[in-house]
Image 1 (cartoon, rainbow, N blue to C red):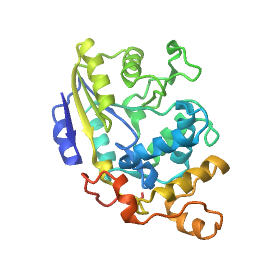
Image 2 (image 1 turned 90 degrees about the vertical axis):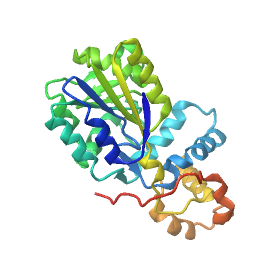
Image 3 (image 1 turned 45 degrees about the horizontal axis):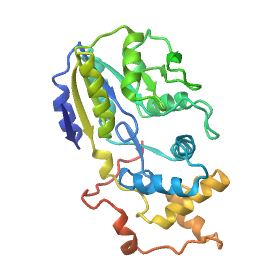
Length: 285
């Protein structure tokens, strides 16, 4: 079963069915944390991917990962919901195991040499401590996948990279030597939920998938403007510098060589998913 939920209250209701034989699995980006940057908003994902395809020579997953990771580590992270760390802590108090399952790779990039350590540190800075669920479980690289930079586990976080989340989760279960009766997986992407649901079916594990969409309704500091995003991405590509939304207007004003004619909001609005109503972004911690 997969259900779509956009409030933390509804997630809490769903988690009431969890017990000591349940494993609760959290995606990270757009579930535990997000960015206020306009380019990172879920509603602008297609625009971002198309820009990368049009502007990065010999476009590949690796090139997109380099760009995306550079934005991720150069921007201010936010909590999707201020109460989410409390929810995670409530699971620990109920003796319900939990783990983070993120698509972040262990592959170093120019902006960060140890992505897993960065991810763990960022989560901890917001009050998340998933290691408390697995205090005696040592870190591990899952070399059986045959990757140069294999999926890895560390401090309650599983980094998957290009390997499907379902396969990494099953590798973790084998490593941790646990067989839950039920897995509750919270992710914002339906394809990840369907992937894990299928694998749980094969393993005879009861599954509840929650597509958590609250982050899809958050708005950035700057109103969406495709040409401004192009300027940010072009600067990142050419100078390896990410200009955050908060500094964008000042940077544009000082750059007389900016080649794009900035579009009006009316000209840009067609690129937005107008079926979703924006809400205010969570305050920075």
